[in-house]
Image 1 (cartoon, rainbow, N blue to C red):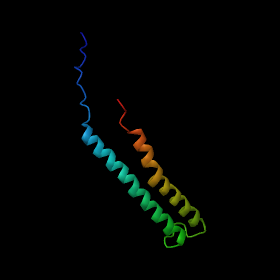
Image 2: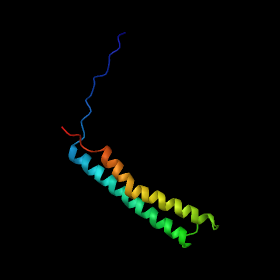
Image 3: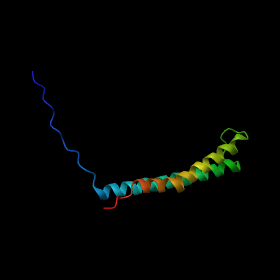
Image 4: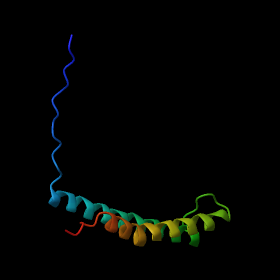
Length: 88
């Protein structure tokens, strides 16, 4: 018996316009979620939203705010730099 290799099917390249729209959506989603994390962190810090009911809530709130700021301000820059179109 001889083994036959399956025919190679070329994988279509993503359409640049669709890829750009998807990347734009992802960056916007990161900013939205980051903003929501900042708001939730401030709610926890102010005592309006209790997680553990102890003094550790402030620490958790600060962590949420810092992570939200990172996700809102820094992560989109990292993604944009990574996805930048190379110069010809």
